[in-house]
Image (cartoon, rainbow, N blue to C red; front, side, top):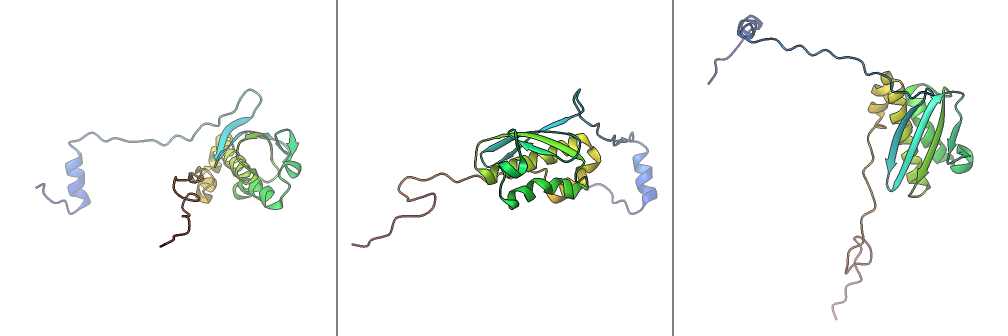
Length: 162
C-alpha cells in the first residue's frame, strides 16, 4: 500500500515529480444569430417549443398570438414569466415561440424551458440563477401507458371472488 501523506509539504514533494495539469475556466461565449437573437428548444410532456429571444420591451408571442390570448389562464402566464423574474431581466427581452403537441399546461412548461435555455445562451452569466431554480432541466415526467388487463395505467378492474 502507498505511504500515507500527512502534510502539504510532503504532498508538494510527491507532486514535483509529476507535471501539473492546470485547467482554466473560460467564460462561455454568447450564442446569437445574425439578427441578435438566441434560439433554444424546450420540451415538457409531449409538447415541443422552439423559442427565439432578442432584446426588446418584454413582448411574448406564442404561435403568432399574444401570450395573454394563447395562454388565457393566469397560472400559465405566470409560468412563462418565471425565468425572467429569477434571472432579474423582467421586460428586457422579446420572445417569439412556436409550440406543438400536448395540452396547454405542457406547452407552457415547454416554452418556459425554451426561454430558460435561450436566456442562458444569450447571456451565459444568467446560467447560475436559472440552474439553481431548476429551469434548465427538462422535466422528464410523461403519461404512463395503459396496460392490458387493466382499466388504466395502474387501476385494475373490480375483483370478484365468485
